Image 1 (tube, one colour):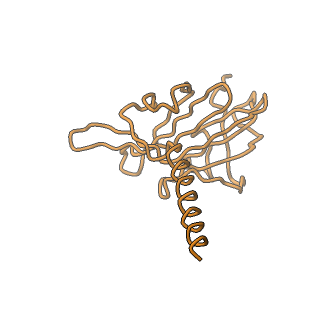
Image 2 (image 1 turned 90 degrees about the horizontal axis):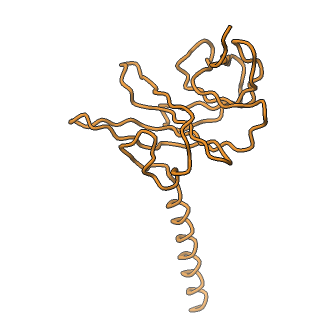
Image 3 (image 1 turned 45 degrees about the vertical axis):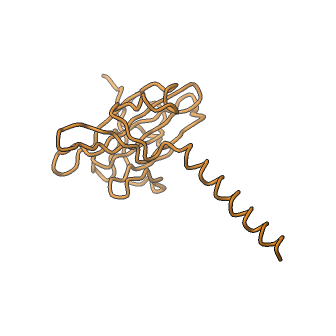
Length: 169
């Protein structure tokens, strides 16, 4: 009985320590005064691709989406923008989306897609490059949800239109 009790305690300790390690490796919840999070060690080898601000109904910038890239992956960061009473701004990582293995004609577009003509849908999409204003081949879509403060996969692509941010006549 004593050995069984010792084994149970050992199992609990081992399982708790592995959960702690996973949590310590996450950047979710980290805060920075740098809008590109360059002071966070895990992000030092990433370069900024683009950055956008999400304005809520009262035109306050409370959220943003940052797209970073290194040699092997794309990292999309959904961030909260916090302002204190002295107007000091802090950026908090709310959620992340890691995208690897994009094929040659694919790229990531952020906030250039509409959901049922709502251009405030905060859409992140993988699309095929196009030589037209409207992108026809939408591969995968996520929505940066300001209510849940999470990046959520959108399985229903009906009603989603994406526009080529690089299109020129």
